[in-house]
Length: 224
Image: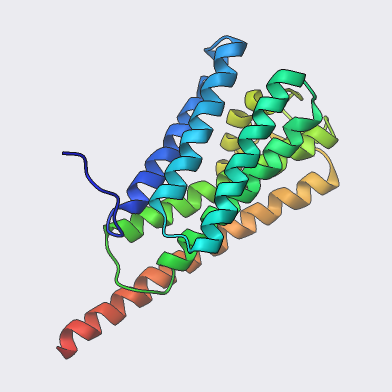
């Protein structure tokens, strides 16, 4: 019997969907162009749907997220039918807004609230993955406006750049900095070091949140 999505396991589904999306983007060099576009778009749509059904949105926020999903799907169809390149930027902006809304919802449910359990720990991983994806989208939009903004990446359709910039984003977020991809313009440099700062603060905030919630949980159990 299939497991139901509950408040005790909902972040597992969201995190698995995000990981599957990242893995699908990594197939960029292995698949023909038409197949690649279908795979990434399909996995993105599945990720959106899983996020909507697995997370606890209030009614107004649920409608907003569903509207973003509907708008994204319409933009994908228009892009594929008309071949208007500007639609790529609209698609990316809608993706960014959706990931941002998902980030907000998860953060409100796990940071500095309630008891610490495995689901919350997995939720903190989902937040980290969402941060990396959001910054990857920002980098792709920067390249769309300034094709030479990054060294080591050639301007291409967003589906082909997603894997490279997701890699660069997570490397930056964890402050590893391998150097194979680097910002080449002042604006790109600012965005990159802002991500590095956000990554450091995120780690501190998540650790503080989990520790404080754990201490409160321990004190409550001792008091009883």
